[in-house]
Image (tube, rainbow, N blue to C red; front, top):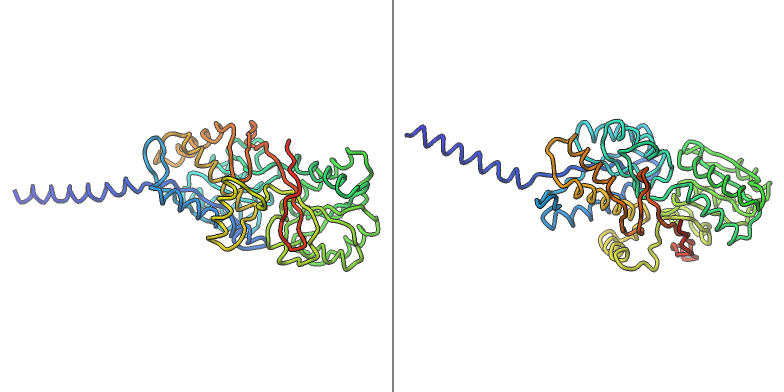
Length: 387
């Protein structure tokens, strides 16, 4: 009898321990983001947006999948703003953490190789910020939340021709950055296709360069009507002041990699009055976008940059894919396949960076905006350009 009571007691304890384990079953999502390196602000903004989303879902009792609630668990891995580190971060998330999906990398320089790793290992990945076509090209496991450079390049060319009355252009790009190289090439083709005039200078630099005087001297000597600089904000903050010191007085045009308040902090007044294409504009936002911006500002004391907003939308897309899966499988490989299929089933999505429709490559078809850096150093909406 005594042995029977002990057996019942042990069984009861086992059941009690098992119940909370079932109730707290989690869905693990990895984040492959640059928390150190050249663009740490991108990682910080992405993590901030993710933490807001995580608090919303788990604070409401978890994510409803097939009528059951599951808590989300976010695992952040630093890719150091490097291509090889992005691959290593992806492998750690997949093999050690056994995440069922990955958000990031952001920048194309990391997203292209990181996307290759995710695709080879059959893990669904969404890049919030990458615009290079190679990130998703022929990779059925990789998706994105941003528009592509083949769309962004002509947007820049059309705007510059109209706004500046430009007949000639110059380009300065980072030869070691897939994003910068790809967008420079697309812009050059788009500009020349307009038939207005030539690209009179096409100069490159390295990611770690601090002195751009040689390239800028060549560009200024060619007398372009404007200079297109598809580089990361930290490089732009050096390029524009150096160009002014060398006597260049004309306008600059930038791309979405300019879209962080840190550009103005680093560059100062010399960046005021310049324009860049990007994914959304906080100024004048309405509806869900304004709600997101206001909540972010209240929590973090700063306006969310485009990569933070795109990270929010990327998580929303991933959640939609998980819901479409309909079930949560304890086997990571089976769950990854179900999420991939769930993502592929998404035909349209309304996010804080606008509405998107998706093509068979997993790329969104969505509008771009052109923003002006005001005399106060704020980003002001100039115009919207849609496909």
